Length: 245
Image 1: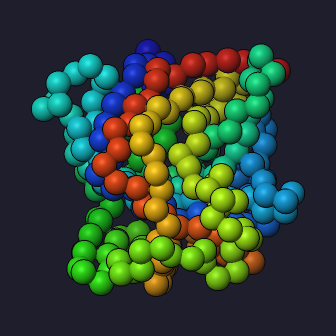
Image 2: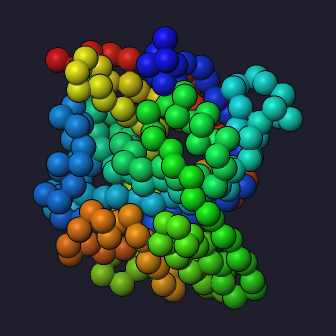
């Protein structure tokens, strides 16, 4: 019964107070081995693949339809690769493959590991905001990001592969689907996200150090875009399973 519970067995809703996302462009060959056989990398100019780090202040996470007071508030740090999947109907779906999930609440890690395959771990998360900057850090995860609050119309990061924000916007998320794969049973779990008023605002990153990315030993990767969204209702539909091949 427990394995079935991990397949996102019911719809979930939450509210994102803030979601700050840094997306890194990586030569596609370096990410290929990190995704399962059923997925393909979502690439740009057939050269770059992308891994995103999302830092999300979440409130009221609960099964859809449950009262708000039953929800959970937590901070999430998620590491995701941009991918594509062709389903049984031949439709090409854009989405995310999660390679690591961290949260500041033990309760959330427990619940997340019961009902998902995302392998949550707990960590410390510190958020400091002043007029000039916002800093998100974690000593345990060797994680620190500093962003400029004064620059209202931030330009794309230096060395970004994108020439303009219109190009970058395609990789600013959230992509509609998240995928999990069971290699033994060849089953693909597809979870669709539903959001409202998703209007990302470009931000300037002053400095960053991300311990988990360092463990991937990526080379020649660059910060491709960075953005923040605020005050967004979000839902995940019940997971759907189909056999691959």
